[in-house]
Image (cartoon, rainbow, N blue to C red):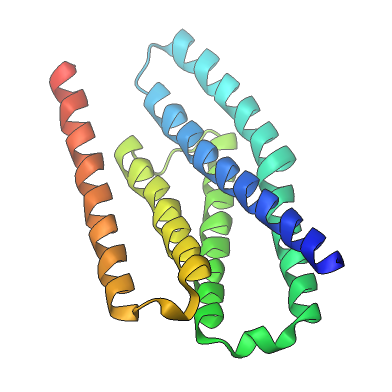
Amino acid sequence: MHFLYAKAVHIIFVVTWFAGLFYSVRLFIYFAEAEKKPETEKTILQNQYKTMSKRLWYIITWPSAVIVALSALYMLTQTPDVLKMPWLQVKLAFVGLLYLYHFKCHSIYSQLQKGLIQYSPTKLRIWNEVATVLLFAIVFLVVLKSAISWVYGVVGLLALSFVLMFAVKTYKRGREKQQ
């Protein structure tokens, strides 16, 4: 019974973690875009984005990432044999990439809190899609388990990545035409 509670908590906090990651990077994009605004507007916007980012990062995103890890570890201690399953090993590799993504987002967050902008809004939009690709990979692995064909899965992820890149570049071109 405790296992099912841990699983429910795990799923809930995976959702909130991804929500935090998606919205954090969106705030990073807005912060970088504000750099081109007139000084007064830029200052007001960037200060607001710093406040919003700080609250989101430390009240939702980080706690969610920690709770996801703790609930996963609990479930693995209850059913250690699942670690022998190839689909779970691949899933855990993607989750490892997700934590690396989280740590890089933390680095970007810290830089923006200091007013340092190292990435353009376009690069941040592309960066935002990395989480989307990881989300697709993890969910498909969990749902399909051993039924997944690795070849189709890899091809599908690559196709998704190209579609997302195309969408970001199309969006950028559309914005440039409007300006």
